[in-house]
Amino acid sequence: MSETTRRLPVYLLLDTSGSMSGEPIEAVRQGVKALLADLRSDPQAIETAYLSVITFDSVARQIMPLTELMAFQEPMLRASGATALGGALKLLDEAINREVRKNSSTQKGDWKPLIFLMTDGMPTDSWESAADTLKNKKPGNLIACAAGPGADEKPLKRITEIVIRLDTLQPDSLKAFFRWVSDSIKVTSQSIAQVAADTPINLPPPPPQIQIVP
Image (cartoon, rainbow, N blue to C red):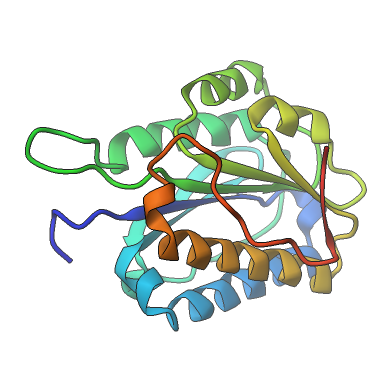
């Protein structure tokens, strides 16, 4: 892939706090695996989509930097600790500044990133200023998912206008979420010209397990 290729950066921010232990974190692992397999079967996604994973528990870590699909290695996910959402948002901001190519006189920059944030709880660190910075900067199209009955939608609404809810952390619901993420990436990579504009992107309709929060 040449340096001049315009990439579609995709950032997955995944809550790996202790409340995700057991079936939920296993379903997330399987969801990421299925997402990778699905995207690797799509020629347009292979051409344009680059993927990064940021996890957050007591601390936030970028466990996979922005990597092309065919070179991406499935990350090891373990659940423990608290919910450092603020740390994850700061890390996302730093990663986008560092990894996403800007427009210059010699090259066109990457497309606007697609960001999917999933959490099953409420933040345990100071997150407000990081949320406000992201909302003001609008570095990408950010979709936030409140997963399960314990997830607080209010912080997510402060980060982005696009908030969705999964009523349960059951494997079927989490798998449906990752299938929808995969479909969203594929649709965006097909209609890539729309992503560069500041207008909202057209995401595919969510499955029945996912509700859009008004």
